[in-house]
Image 1: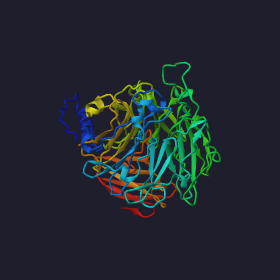
Image 2: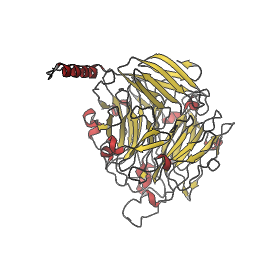
Image 3: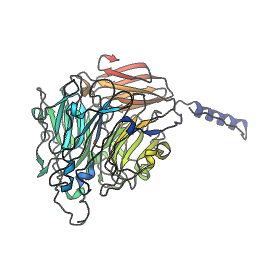
Image 4: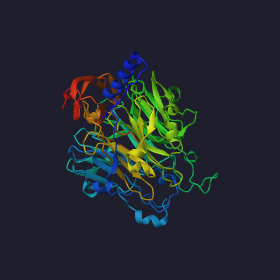
Length: 562
């Protein structure tokens, strides 16, 4: 809590009164509490011994440079979040021969012991996939009360259904979700998935993002000694899978007008960008124009990125877009879009009426991102003061060059300042980060960070948020009328005093990674929420009043809070 000591020596009584009022407002304003923030690296004591491998001991192709993601979810239903980390592996014909020692390197599932430590349960759970894994989408796809895993790979994808006994079963083929063996002539390379009920039939659907047609034998004609640029490869079409009545899925990409065979997807984000009550889809493309597919409310999609202002950056150039992170960065009630890349990224401010403005320069992010390869990035309120700050994992793509990660604080109006170095040793050390997830692993109400790296150490890092600033918070789990999956894309508005906080319910909000499935709201000095509105994807609205802060709640559509 801020303490104020000041002496007023005014030129006149009027100025004395004005200055006194202002300083008292600063001291007493519940949104103006300067935090004492410490992010502590507790990876070792937590028992997270994950080491990333890219299949050999050298670093020489675009698959190796991409890294893998992190997903957090409650796999065993005990009320705390567990950790699933994807890994690379030795691949014949791609990895150097001496890398055979890394053959069949599995992904790792860590169970949260609810005491600050984790236990590796990969083998017991049966989720140690040994393909080259990029990301894992996690959700209760069949509404049976437990969380399933859709694993996105270079090669065949894998769908694990949760048996509700601590184990999983591979049901990929019966669901039709393995994906084609090849796209555009080369091995299918899936990098992520977005879940939502696009046709409002009560069953969850999914868009699988596919990257590029990677030819491991290709040598750049312009830079033969360097890793070929992504622009030198062909793309691969992303694919929309519609869930059938029997639980299986059918590819409806072409039927929905979403088939772009040369696109190079790096991330997918579902949100209602134009505030018209239906869910749209943003696709970040690597060194191509991004896509924004507008839903007309009748199962028809139109690509509108250029006319909406999110196809290119403020210089009119396509970027190496990693992912679209969403949130209201300036408190105007509209959902903005942060798209990171390997130059300076783009922060698109939502102007309303389906239009965006690139404010990267004005926000201070151009200066903070320039020269950095920004991979995973998240908009999150690390200090619970009611505005969204930014974390980014950084590193150069073409070479194994480490860079400083970034923690940027929002001043409440959408302008950001780097505060990382003074708030944790992790931010004073260069790493080569890739995937990262934001979560409250210890359920204490502040948000922690887990990062995957591909540098020489190749270790994961768990950063515990040890903030002590007396700010309040509220956590919210949404369950729609057909289960948690049918709540994806819901819009939540919280009124606290004179402030309005708006968020979209979306899990996958970082490069290759899935964040805490619970929605998190920082409330500053306020002890309660005055009003809570939930606008569900089926356009029904629930409203609640006078909600006590500092706890996790579950909102069930049409049934209330618990």
